[in-house]
Length: 278
Image 1 (cartoon, rainbow, N blue to C red):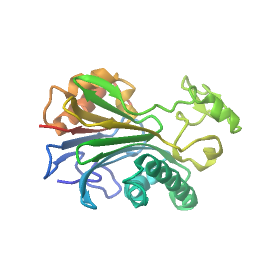
Image 2: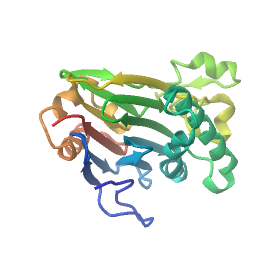
Image 3: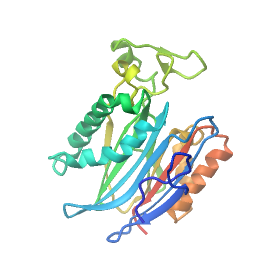
């Protein structure tokens, strides 16, 4: 079963909030779980979890898009980001450059459509698995990818936090403030330093992704993609320790979300688990 989006909402989306699928050609299996947080706004997370065949290759496409100030931008990303990456002429020869260019061009398209999409934005973490051998992970914002190698957590993304990129923000004419509240925010508004959209803050934000590559070998067990609703309350190794005990990736994703709720996470929690071997 290939699934693009599946969670409860009053806006006409599917009513289920978890699912799974597998490859017909390799041992790859995946599962996902999305849980609305306790905040007083509609669910703003979207995901992608599917396996496709493209130009004679098998591609696993997995993503978490965590929206803010509405769900228009993550919805747009769900529909367009992967297709924009694969449209790049040099994807097979230079995935790094193709992913980077597609992230930037997609952000420009979002800004161009801002009258329709509104003033909100979204983080993104994406993973492209090529023939269950090569893994490319990219991200903007604080949704995170964590790989398990021999039971050891390896972070495959970079959390883009205002304090760590203060210099870039200030060089663009912005500022970082912990007021109001106790979280560092760009211009006192946004708690990430890179994002798609956010037209009102875009002159002070970056949308270029951090990109990492990994070979999938015998030690590579599974990948976790999740929104910050999980990572705010759980360390990378804790998540790996929970997921490695559960062979079914859908059940593993559900357990991770449940544990985050038990730890009193207030944010939306979205999680995709990809197992590379049986």
